[in-house]
Length: 316
Image (cartoon, rainbow, N blue to C red):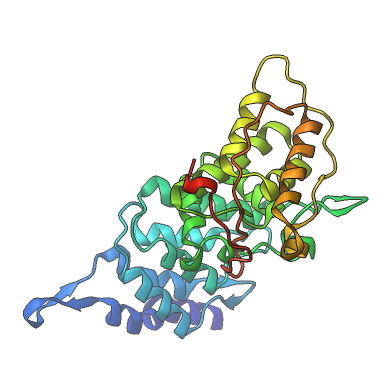
């Protein structure tokens, strides 16, 4: 009986104060303008959300998420459908989205994303939370540059989908295989090259995703992400697709983790490692190296750890 009473209260009374607050906005001249019903339903869904017998969100979190939903300018999936999708992610394996992850999603996608882009981001987040792979180990250690993944911590979508990681979020929205990209980020942790612009980030994550789909080699993904740029990886893929090419066994990376010793590395060392990897792949002399200094933009902190410029001032 107590449980039934609580459910009735949850369904009718608790969301009322939030829905009344979110029920209208003042239009010009002070005339109240009712919000769409799918927006007004958001606080109710959040209020009713429970996990393992406990409420998932407190009043402050519900209020913050509701305000973000009200401020959205993106068209596409309705706010109520977005909330339901976000609340369902991770429930089966006990790795649900936190209030912060949901807030970061709405902040990152507040404008500029259509239905397909939003759907791709949701697919990525679902795969990241529900399909986390066991860490793959070798005699050189764990095959991942993702510090959280190396330590066996649950994946956090905020590391990739947030306002601070706008370029990655945009790249994810345009990903050709969001589920595979989630696996790539488990391995790489981020893009360890210049995040010059949205176009570059999108190209690079798609090239890495295609490379992993083709080879299933975390070691090769680590090497390509550490020392090659997008257009060099594209050339490697092109050569691999040629008739007669045979991929060598690639179990161990030939490079060292960037986050551990990047400040000690020289550009000449990167070029040397590039040639060693190409030689091992049987592509020596078949891939044109772009030849520019690299920056490491870490997704966790958004800090640039190395600065540089293109040779001759050319982008391509």
